[in-house]
Length: 149
Image (cartoon, rainbow, N blue to C red; front, side):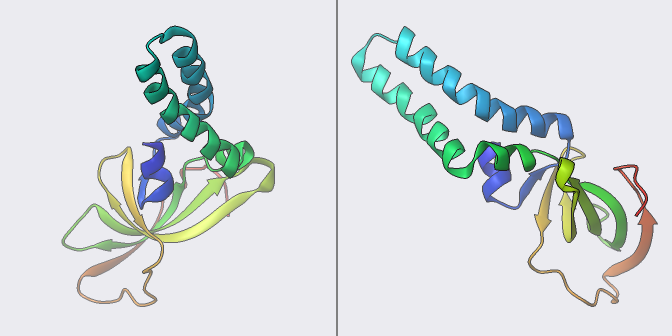
C-alpha cells in the first residue's frame, strides 16, 4: 500500500490506515531485516529474505524519514466544488493536508472515490471550465480538518 500511495494516483483517505502504513514501513523494515538475519539459518533463504527489507530501508533513507513523516498526513476535503452528474463518486474538490509546524498544503483535485477509505486522484488534468452537462456545480463545504479558511 505504501508504494501504491507514493508512486501512483491511488491515495489512502483514512488517517489511521495511512499512518499505520507509513510508520509500519519505517519501523517494520529494520525489524524484519534483523529478524531475517538472526532467525533464518538457511543461506539461500536468508539472502532472499534480506533483500526486500534492505531495499525498503535504503529507499526510506534515500527519501528521508522526515519527508515520509510529513507526507504521512492524509489529504482532507474542505470543499466539494463540482460533482459528476452521472457518477456520484467522481468529484472536484479543494483539499488540505496538515504538515505540522509547516502549516497546510492545498490543492484542487479531481477525485474518484473507490471506498470511503481509498481514492484515485488526478492533480494534472484539472480543467478550468467544468460548466457543462456532465458536471454539476455544488460548492458544498465539508471542512474535514475543522479549520476556518
